[in-house]
Length: 69
Image (cartoon, rainbow, N blue to C red; front, side, top):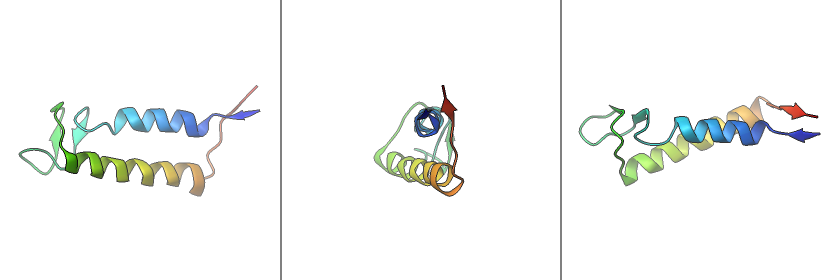
């Protein structure tokens, strides 16, 4: 049986935490911009740290598993 949780959680978080798609932290003109579709280096770094933290909590701390087959 394959554990699909890391793959699915990673894809969902990647889409949701893409800077500029839903929100951008920090934004260009405000601390938080929503739906701007623009990004900068600081927001990429912040969203990367957020991705890693949420991914680590869901996969390692909560022991999330999705088995198929």
